[in-house]
Length: 507
Image (tube, rainbow, N blue to C red; front, side):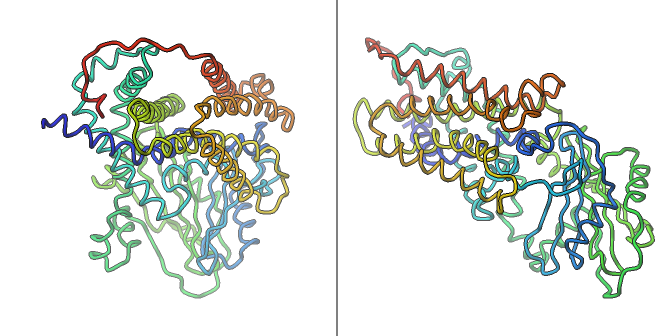
């Protein structure tokens, strides 16, 4: 057996088994490219541009009023993509971090929403914490195996770039689509799989750090980044200096006004420290230049410039994976390439099904059910989440959790329906029809519930970040409607052609 033939089985099963999980990761990651724009869309208070009425000092006082004994206060000033304050605090008992998004007009906390961060978290840990991160890591390893074995078995890889025969028999057409999307997106898919593993390797393989730092992982990160830390002295804090003045001093020192997170550690103690981080996405590497000040006197205590080769490599890989450079053009490119990854996975699943449907075999019903439940369920559930965001009362308690349950509930309904209808041959058509109705109806609902965020209003004021979401929804609905209509037409059987058997077809 040749190397190519031996790789065929590895490609088949190494690609099939994690394919549904990889679809979730790719789909969520693609949407997360525009997580901040989606965050704004999901917060009606941000639909119309408004000036910021609060200073950094006022935000600090508001957080201290909520938690006077907080271990630390965190503030993120408005930026171009996030025109509002993020603020929060670490409770004194070191329990879960509490954060707020502040209305730029009133300074009050805006109604809860999972926002665009939901898809970002779903992408890298499935919203399941450390266990989810390990599951995603295993899927990424499988993906690398499937990509490399696919390169080996596709001896016509460059010819496949120019080959797409949608009118051929089902298996051939799906194989052409699988090859085309796989070849076009191959460098990107390799990049994403490798960098996704590399940037979290300290979590996946912590043994070396645990041994070298005797279980103190925080010390490792402090050494790597050159961070500054000062212990509390258990004495009452004197009057604090102005945070706005410290921010102005930081801008003067690093020659710009890109402000990231501002933190005040043990603010009620005499040894309180203010950290001000630079936020600069003009290049592919963000060095997280941080200045540490004494919270009372304003004296500069430490300047963090993590220019070590190790940190530069890590920062480069992180920003490359997360598209934190190049602006909207790069994010749009990542979105398209991510969706190509989804299309490659769907086409590969269809190749597996068509081959075994023709000759019979085990697992066909299970694969059909999983296709409908995952490939069909996730887009419908995502649209359901956006509907929930618009329809749930603004003052509802635990509103963000309610949005999550809408997402989960819709997905479970679609999954149950897909399992029951797995052998009907109509699951894909019906899912496409549902996506069409939901995607085309969402901009209309948006216009009815939040007129200032409607497509006509955003286009009139040239707000393309907001308008782009409605336009993508309309385009997606139109495309799915066309595909649903085509699948509803009578299928004409095509005469089989005699052709050479390819190794990748045997996979």
